[in-house]
Length: 253
Length: 293
Image (cartoon, rainbow over all chains, first blue to last red; front, side, top):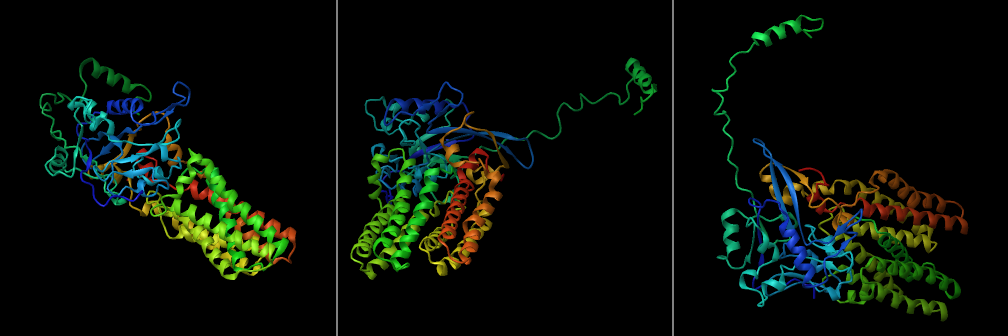
């Protein structure tokens, strides 16, 4: 049934650190690679080498410019994938039961063999986390790399989602939010982890760490005394040139 | 939202078909035999034709029967059940009228109620979506129901019901547009709440995740044709409700009735196209395609 579980034993999810993400898109590429070669229908590219390429991705990185009231603008890179919401609206709208949220770990998954490709779950998601695959015509979404995190054939260090494993700046963290002492719970607590669009009432599991406050440039330039202009009026050759040009017709306009 | 033709055809024709079934169930017109057969054929062509059209946009229509399993949570599933139950019950009721010249009143009333329930379930597929503030409102089911009942009365040849209902549907339509236009703004969703970055300052989409388009942008960040919105609104209102009302007040003739029905159909198609094309999904905020914070 597409009824949501009342509680889940664990709450697996990601913490994404907007302070350290450098916008390299490595998570996008590793996600696409792993999820094309492993569990479920491959993530198709349509017209990949043509004029109008379009492809399926489970993780995309936006970039935003944020301008404070005072101080310079900042660029903030913003990876976005399924937030594995506690009140996942994508699950309850599904007419076939293909969409479900696991009671054991809270991961939201799609049973691709039951998906009719109606697209209603993608409409119900405020975050754009679900994409209909252009070739397989079934709904694709982040599985939290279910085929990695429980995969005992992989070395233990690799039993994290591909995006987390690959991130070169350590901006992505994987863990259990139900455990208050887990890495992700501690990070969320200490850094003020936030929900995206909380007013939608979806109760996302994934948390975003806001960028740390930037240090401000001192308002007085330390080099100012040294570089103070020595004169306001040009002298010498430049002074003569200035006077000569000013004397020409229209020179004082 | 992307105005997919299959979904526009589905909601328009099925709404009209179930509207006609509603009136047949109530005994308007009180016909039997061949005349009843013609009315029921028209109603079923519209209702079933619309339902079949709705499967055209599915990625895997061969699995459509699975959509009957999740009626406890999903409005789409409930709509499937209600439409099938209604169509089966009313086929029995119609057989009584056509072949036995017998009206099973109670069956007709139940079928009429189920017709309304079917249209209501269709509307709730859209109304339930918090992600589309324009639809997430009580006026969405009201609009679907008044359109269905008014169009059904028109098809059933019941001007005394059709006239007030068409006027009411037109008024509901105007309200839906006027109030709906501001609903995204009033919902409080902005690029600032979407990204959580509003606490730092003014947020602007700087660079999209990719240079091309994607499924989300095609499906939910649809902008094509909104510039024709005001003209299409005029067409929807005049063709859908204005012209049929005028035609119904003329002395009755089958030609005028047919023109009124065609005009109404064109108007409702235009209205339904706008229903999708003008609906803005909050995911557009992430792409900087909605109002700034």
